[in-house]
Length: 125
Image 1 (cartoon, one colour):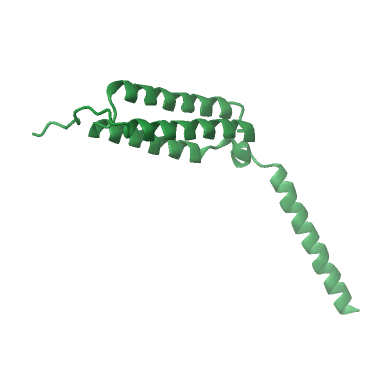
Image 2 (tube, helix red, strand yellow):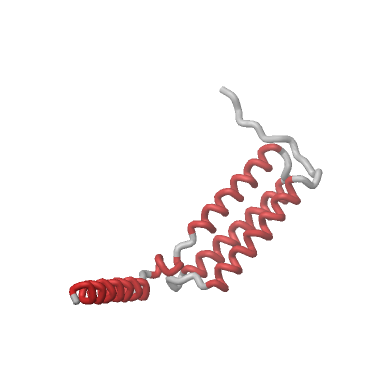
């Protein structure tokens, strides 16, 4: 009889803990639900570093650099617009990531297309 009561008490405790976990998941803040886009911000930082590096090494001319910078600005605007309401939906996230991938391809193509400029050097003192 004692084992049956202990087992019932454990089962009830398990059910209550699962219910509390489910309730806390439903009351998540917007950041926890997906308004935060750290992956997108990190990728943009890496892409901007690639653009700067290719421009400094002479792999990108001024027009290519400006075009790629405009694409990065477009991605930033998409990200801001998506997060404006506090939740980034799957569709919005997909659109931003598609723009990132497209810009990533453009960076690679432009940096290796054979059009070069003189590498920029920093003045030495």
